[in-house]
Length: 141
Image (cartoon, rainbow, N blue to C red; front, side):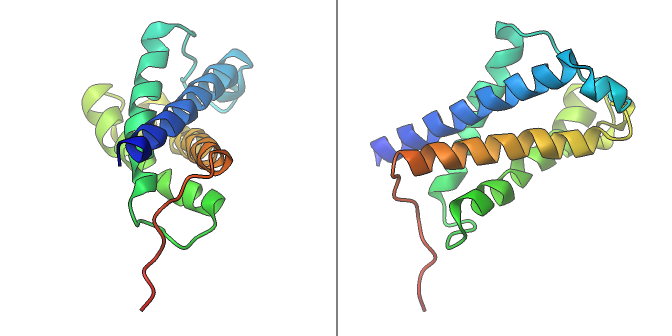
């Protein structure tokens, strides 16, 4: 059980790192700004910490029967909706004072949140697949 928890966390943390780098790259290349979204963090420990740690915690979702039975990549996309919802309805309005969905940062902010968290889900799923992780499957009735 400890090895599954460790693997889930590590895979999610790697997904979180990939997400942070994607967010930084979008900001550096001016993609978010071109879309009218004020997300362009500088790359550093203060920015990386949150996505890596929370990515690892969210990685434990892959150990639950949620979306079991789906192809792993599709499962990753579906599970990425969890962090997206928390970002849009908890972090933006209550932690960052950016309003529900982060609309104070730009109208397309929720779209970018979905894209960035999809990166997390796909990288986490790919990492687990590469490790041959035995994930929960849907119970047969």
